[in-house]
Length: 93
Image (cartoon, rainbow, N blue to C red; front, side, top):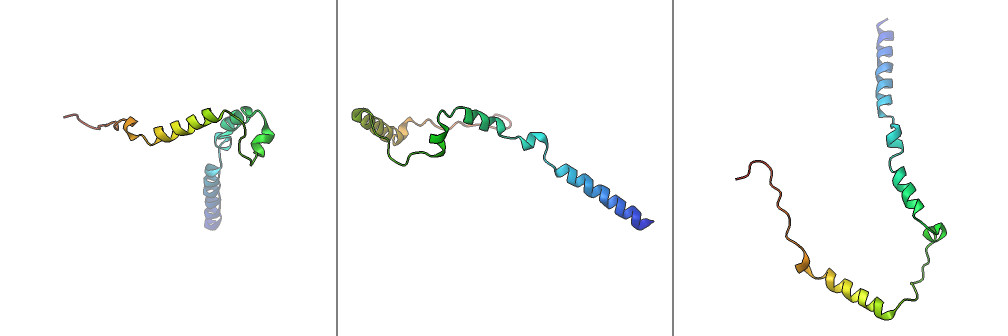
């Protein structure tokens, strides 16, 4: 009798714990919305799946040179970075 009661109690507890670990519908579908929107923004799915390995050809050489120079000069310019924001917690003094 005690063995049957212990076995039944163990199975009930194990079943309850296993059910608690099962993913909910929300967890199972997590990220589906983002993937659907991203997929909807792709015009040519073949190009997205199999991108060309060759470099981009065409474009104005002057414009491309300006883009590269601007990127390199602005990325290295640390003076444009603002000072960090100080966030205090607790009482102000």
